[in-house]
Length: 506
Image (cartoon, rainbow, N blue to C red; front, side, top):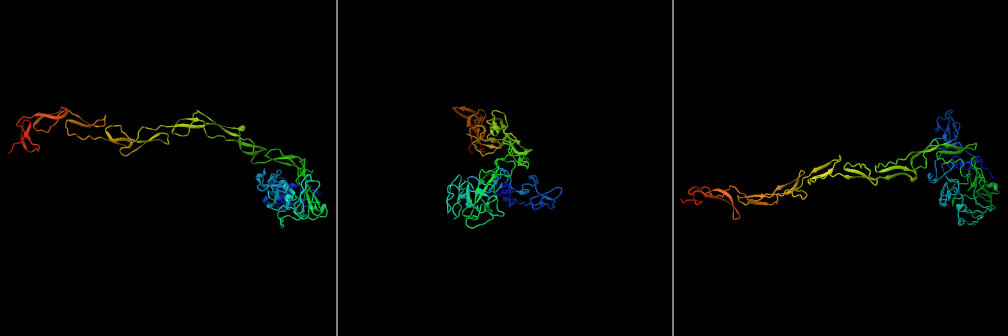
């Protein structure tokens, strides 16, 4: 089996997915065709950088040589999406070593629920795209052989499948997965993935490659075992737990996993999200500081950021602007806490309340009493915090208004004052009674009024009001007889006789 050499599995796979490298004769082909050309800035260099002093396009050596959003891969500056988990890569995977979004290479990269790698994406239904081989046969369960025409499945320390062909079964007695597969000899994906540009009829599956011996089937992958079956077709077995070399000098336990050489847990991972971990040519771990957002796992900080290899954050602002709570941040309780206060003086911000005090974390005040007890005013607290009384005017006989006087009626509001009309008592035509409204009872009173009066008799004199037999009368003494008088018409002249005006006949 041939070694991958400089075409290291993971880096080559990523460059191939980004369209920046191919594997041919075990060597990676760089795309930075501008190297050696004169430049004014890195914009003049394709997949390379402009040297600041020589003004010549050169290969990059680290991520610091490339522009924003680019990464240095195989000495090429390539554009990729940075990530920390698969959640940052819709339709792709987050490479744990490179921290960028990449397409899947084989189904071993995919997870339960989306266990098939189709055209670089993990899917749950292999019918979603072309695999270049039968995924049910290679990765399927108990129904793996249900769609085959010539054979079934046989577990011998692993799972054997049969491709959708009429050639029959192909088994591997040493365990693992065996499936016929076409291996192209020129510029094919060394990882065993199918070129998305290839088109075929029917089920979009490449026909098995014919072979005479095992050498004809070598795909250049140290983590696959390629054999030529008795039917003259190439079959590939994905190796697991087999020692290999991932060309990372810092990894110690390189093993094949699902057809890929994997060094296991990154030995250079310092657990610090503010460093970019790597391995140099001297097999020494490197930890380069990076900038950007991070998480210091402290609920009492916010807007965390990387600075000098350390994740820092600003103290959390726990001020709820409530005078009736004690605000503080308690990491053990998950962040900000707000303890309610009681019976503490405060201000509720309402100028129309008095005696404000905290009640279970809420500032409560007593509304100012602006009632002036006048039904003819609209009482309210003004924006300045003072009581105001708006004068009202209403119609007569207002039920809300009373001037408190018994001898008025039809009380009503008039410019903020309650007034009424005086009760009028009709005269009883008796000059010896006082006709008025009694303020105590509110009723008309006709009581005796002593004093001089006029009984309308011209033949009486010294008329005076007197009470007689329970009656009040105006009476006078008789005028002397023969005293001139006038009849009631005021014209006819007569003489007084016995207190009466007597008109003599002509």
